[in-house]
Amino acid sequence: MIEFKDITLADKDIIQSFTLNSWRRNCDLSFSNLCSWRFLYNTQYAIIDNFLVCRFYADKELAYMMPIGEGDLKPVLEKIIENARELGEPFMMLGVCVGTKDEIERIMPDKFNFVSNRDYADYIYLRSDLATLKGKKYQPKRNHINKFLRNYPDYEYKPITPELVSECLALEAEWCKANNCHEQEALAAERQSLTYALNHFEQLGLTGGVLHVSGKIAAFTFGMPINNQTFDVCIEKANTEIEGAYTMINYEFVNHIPEQYIYINREEDLGIEGLRKAKMSYHPEILLEKCMATLK
Image (cartoon, rainbow, N blue to C red; front, side, top):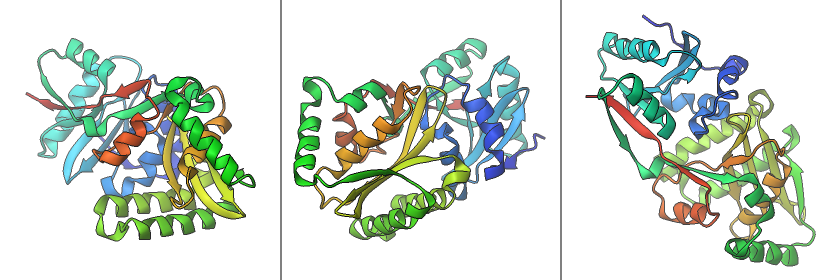
């Protein structure tokens, strides 16, 4: 039996020793997401033959993440398939992206069914696109920025520090009130994850920014690296009464992220029409398909 253990803040270094050096860019692999959503998914991990393996429960069904590591993947897959069998559960693996799907098919041909869901595809952008908004396709975004600058010339952008966490939580509370979070299970869960992340901001290794207008918070965002080239934007919240606040916090934040990050992952749209429209309006470089793999 494989010994899995709960993911805690103390596991950041060992988990990131695998994820930061991986080529994989899916948002599920940012340490903040793994740790701050553990309350919902009961996420655990194990190191198997120099591969990081995470398992969790999605809608009360056991699931594994695609292992991360270097070496022979086949025996690792065989061991987690056996682990599911020992637990009396059907085997299911999530977060199987295009490259890893091909690898699985090569080493274990015709053993799995693969199903993708557009709602869970990651939106990945070039950092240079979001930081400059150059070209005709970004003209509407530049218009929003310019209007914001005209309306709020006194705005300030500041990095999130422990002293600003209470302001972020206050804005999130107002946002939740306006969006009826208590009536929507997904938003209530997001609020719990967000609150945990903000209250453990430095321990998680997060980077974030706050937008102030007339001395009051108008928006905030935060995230952290997925790997050495890809940065994950975990959360973005704004006061919708301040026109252009979302566009401006996005623009400022990517301009404060170190230039080593070529890609910005702005996560999934979960099938929410308005969110999909907003994410598509920034013209993703990659729409990262993620598959569920089950045994035939």
